[in-house]
Length: 442
Image 1 (cartoon, rainbow, N blue to C red):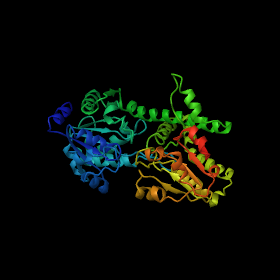
Image 2 (cartoon, rainbow, N blue to C red; image 1 turned 90 degrees about the horizontal axis):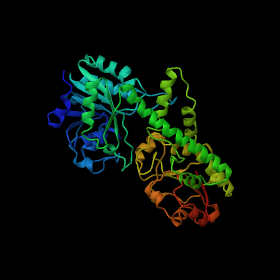
Image 3 (cartoon, rainbow, N blue to C red; image 1 turned 30 degrees about the vertical axis):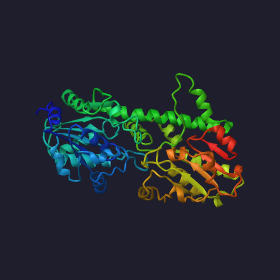
Image 4 (tube, rainbow, N blue to C red; image 1 turned 90 degrees about the vertical axis):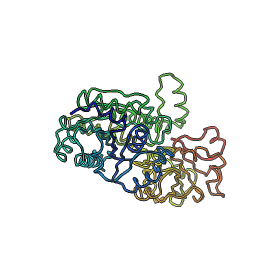
């Protein structure tokens, strides 16, 4: 079969690309490709598909563009047989014991196998440890289809690099790693992605290398943030401001610019476990990566403990205090609540019989309740507080003036009894000092 005709069939309007999985990664890819070629967008989530079809983008990744996209959204898997280029972009979460949960990838592979047409190239974008695409996905597709990989169809891997909520580093402006099972498939995969990736594609020699690129780049970031979180804990004990220390450090040309914080989301807080799991299977036990994970996974409790200590220092009884948490999503200006470490702050507070009020104008209230058992309260309805924890740097919170922050507290509270926990160091240090409020910054 000739696989080097797929690109030509796409740009001529005769061929189609199919996306399997229309979440924060798959949907933007589908919408971008649909500006140039015919695209089928498949997902098993009927609510999500119906929203997209009606011009509603709950992920906020493409915004108004969803209303005019030419993507053919569907929940009918049989339509995958219309495409000769299939991209799989389903989630790859972890189990409670931090082992990889490959069920979504296996399920997607099964669906693809049941509907793949001969002569198709399948590209996986889901983040996995090296070896999953070839050792797990290929056998499933072969079993379901009865077609032989390398003969009747071919496969490749191109790790997603989308940064949810980022309006600067978007899909088209981030270099794309591409790989294929052989030279022919790799070349064709590169040509197809070059249709939309303005920054260019970077071809690596094989699929395992491409798989490794993604988990290692996110593990590197995780380790760097873990170091900064340790620095923050040391600075806290020294009684100096972490942000001021980092400001001074970053004045040097070779400083890396990382900051401490809550490391959640579907990538940085998850991918290191995929890498270390693969290492364990090969008999190597991580000495750095897992320790970094331990530090970052502990930061929610650390922030909550700091808030409790500050309340006690302010003469308040934490059990009787009204605590407001601003933010739930895993990052600022983004509705994605997956693997939110703010939930760890809430859980830790509840261990001390504190039931905090949580407000997040970006988060989906239904998802917050389903995933974390948290009832979100609109900003206008939050009660006056004894302690306010600003956990996420949404623009709505970042723009609050010192006076507006003070208005969040009970009216009869003295300034030095107002406990403000600024997790992201959103507010200027000099203004916080001048406010008279008791504040703590990570």
